[in-house]
Image 1 (cartoon, rainbow, N blue to C red):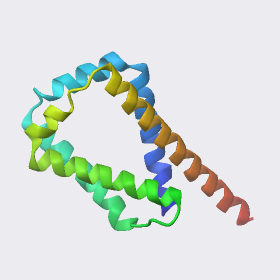
Image 2 (image 1 turned 90 degrees about the vertical axis):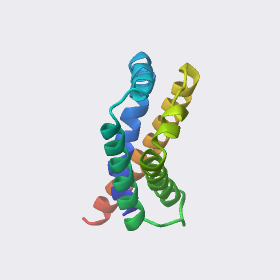
Image 3 (image 1 turned 135 degrees about the horizontal axis):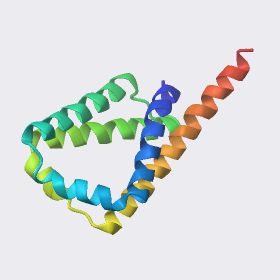
Length: 133
C-alpha cells in the first residue's frame, strides 16, 4: 500500500512543488485570493483534504520504514488541513498569508517529498515487477 499511495501522491506533490517554483506570481495571487473565496469553496476544499487524508490514514497507518512514515505523514497533513478548513476556516485563511520566501520553502518541500515518493513508488513498483518474471 505504501508504494501505491506514493505512486499517487508523489507525482501530485512533485508537480505542485514545481508549480510553486515556476509560477510563483500565480500562486501568490491564488493565496491572496483565498481570503476572498466563496465560503462554500473553502468548505469543499476542507472536505476534499479531509477525505483524501483519512483515506490514506485508514488504509496506511504504518510507521516502520522511512517511506511508510512519509506516506502516513502526508495523510496526516491532508487530514489536519481539511479539519482546519472545516472547523476554523477564518483562522486557516489568515495562516495562508505568505510571501516569496514562504512559497519558495513550500515549493522546495513539496518538490522534495514528491520526488522521494515518486522514487519510492516507481522503484518499488519496478522492483516488484522484475521479481514477478
